[in-house]
Image (cartoon, rainbow, N blue to C red; front, side, top):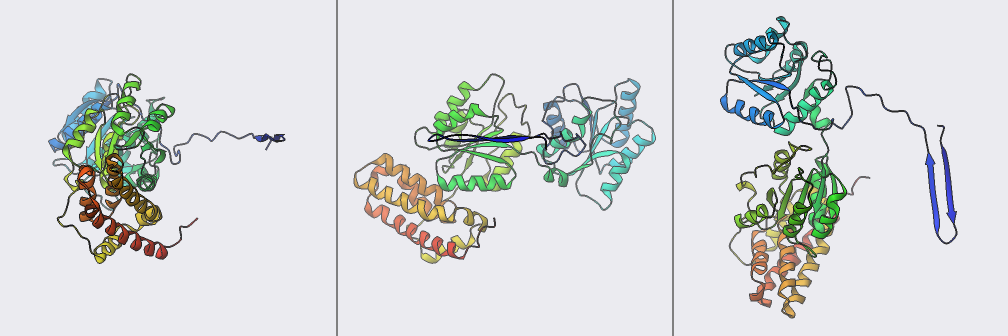
Length: 455
């Protein structure tokens, strides 16, 4: 291969191995594999949104303007044809047209066919949004020169990446005909070639570290762990992070202080989304997170749908977010709850483990069987010497880890100790310790029945 290999060794010091090799650059083609082109703004690009529903038009208008487009609107296909004709006559044809598939008077396919018949498409790229895909739609899109086809509701991330794929190749040569620059884009192709996010997870709890890594890597993202807030502050300037997931309560430095330092040192014009992850789901905790400079608040345990929604919301502007994005509305489905009672039967614990996500158990069961007894032992030791800070920390860990299961009574017991550790006594701690003992026993039996992880 025209290269070389060598070694430099010094007794008592060590060895350094090195090699060189000649490789050919991969040809740049329409199919770029599993990575998308870098996300950029489309300043100076013109777009036309064609949809008979005002709400849909407003939503699309917002995102396109956010990304730099100059946007016009049309309520139906006939009106859109008229606007396209005027734009062509003025020598300023639209760079992009986003059209609804189902409209009165003239639907999306009819509009695309008329545009092509009138020879007005030129280099204009078309993206169709449909409330329900029909048989043969993909083939019709290809025949009519439609570059992208997404079913509703299309998320901002999906729309952004569709536009990136069909418009980015035209940046160097805006005269290239529509359809020649890139392959036909659908939700399926976007999933196959999903943009990988670079995510920094700042979390001290081994169970939560394992679970967050599992969920995010399953989504196709790259994960780096920082074990406390100080490590998070130190690691932040070392890479370009798309998003930071920040635990609130950690040793050395907590999430609030870490976020404030990151925001103080962040370069001008840059704003990386920081998402709080905390076992406290109260509104006051969310307000504290936002006041510290965080962009959103997610309660633990991690809710996959809620996490995906947050990533979609904030990373739609990935690479171009220059100012804080508006926080999402609180999601009642992810809010924590409690149940009255102070004892938990063994069959209730066994049932909760049985109902838990199998993949999650496979990832964290072994860690839990070590961490839960460790935290209970810490709680007993702290209580014996009236170390309320340490007891509060142990209860916080227990609450977070128990939150992985449908065990509201145990979670509430841990929460009460965390909230007021100084009023805790051996009788208060005993039922929680007994419940954790039962849970660990069930998990140990479950570990024996779990299949071996494939290499």
